[in-house]
Image: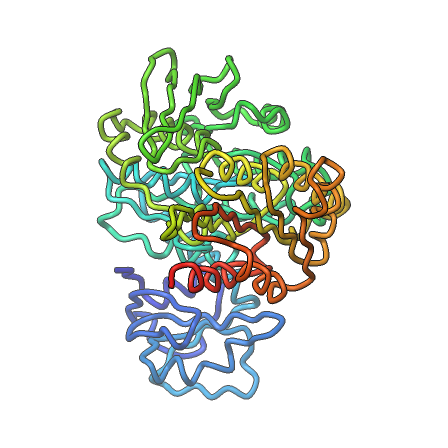
Length: 463
């Protein structure tokens, strides 16, 4: 439990204590008045569509010990309530998290990347918690608000923390890393995502490598050795670096990957030592995530026996590669959490590998934030669908029209391709044309919410 006094917090956030006893104990922080509990500090954050100042009364009614505000206009200050006035409540939240992080002398591992950072983080946690009491980022708490809240969940019993860092623009990784002060960093890859704000893959690589500036001589970075842009960008930093991947020069090399026992078997060379890892998801595309996480755990002192036990415990979170069995022997692959051209192509390859009976059906929706690469990126996915043997393609959304057209150009027949502007139209078609022996892949950007189509189809096929 957090144990800080109100006066100390006021100093940390460069605020003015308008009212309240500086000795008031604070046992946690909260930004949502509905989740408020006795003794916590409420941060009145502001955004385009919300203002936390409107919920001050509700926060205090639910037991808030104090609140951090940026506007004192028309507010009353009952003596029993503590109020800290700051210029910017979000900046104050980040400043407090940074100070709180500095009170813990434990390793912090930062995980970032264009694709698969959450999967890498979760796999790493499975390996490390075999030997350490770990804290890890939950859900999508990986941004300017979520990271500070994660950091302030640290407790005395934690021996290690794994934090996920997300970004949409240059400078964001640097800001988050400065709060988390990581000792180690894992960069899973760089790819053509967020091009609307980043411009090029080279600029994405430079932005991801901002985390390396926080690493001191005792730490290290684990980098995707198959990503030339990433390796090039990392040369600007003097920290200790290791690489993973298929490249023969990688420190932690993937030699071969095969599917076995509803999972993948990965033959590896860890700094010259040969080993075999088994991972309980039959998706070869995850080999890099597995090996990078295992390599970080290995360098932090976890033995292969513990690493293997941790990998065997992995369960995918959210709608990431969830394999749902159907009564007739088919499967639904719900990979609808998010998408970009690289992850789309990888998912299509996975679906092809998992297909046993029936038809291979791909339901693919719009990908967002591709900038000038939008048309080319969607066309790339259409070609990947054809190359991976998709027998029925449903393209959903305005941008997905380019997926459909490129699939036809790549050799799929018009009869195999079905374009729908809306999910509702696509669901109507699926209800009447899918059997429970088919393999059906769903993937699109998060904003498309294709999971509603998954739920609808499951109800029909598993009746």
